[in-house]
Image (cartoon, rainbow, N blue to C red; front, side, top):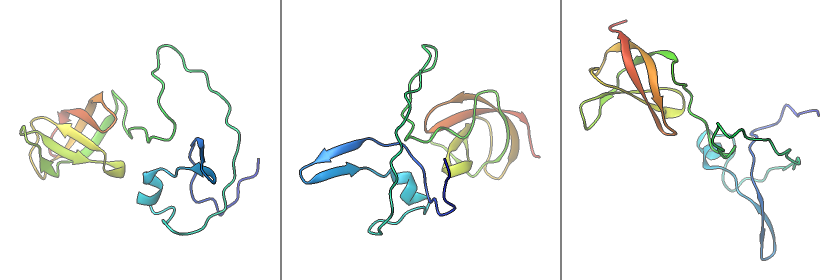
Length: 131
């Protein structure tokens, strides 16, 4: 399949029936990243999706939701930008994703190992300070 250089975004969505036609919902992140603008007109191509088998070990996640930009066990260098309500350091990485770093102070650059990953935040343990 040939993909145009004019491709602005690519996402999976269900086609829903409405009173006078069909609706495809564009995920909010496509507007947030500036790929598309509300009120503008775009050409839409529909491609039949193939059903992927999900193993029993992996939870099924909708493909339209962004995945966390970090994985457990990953090593990252981060700068602490804020302090959370419980006194933990807060760093932000790709797409504003939050990494909570216990024991870190604002302005510190630290090397962390990601110990826990959730859909909207991760926890990192300091393995080297003041980098």
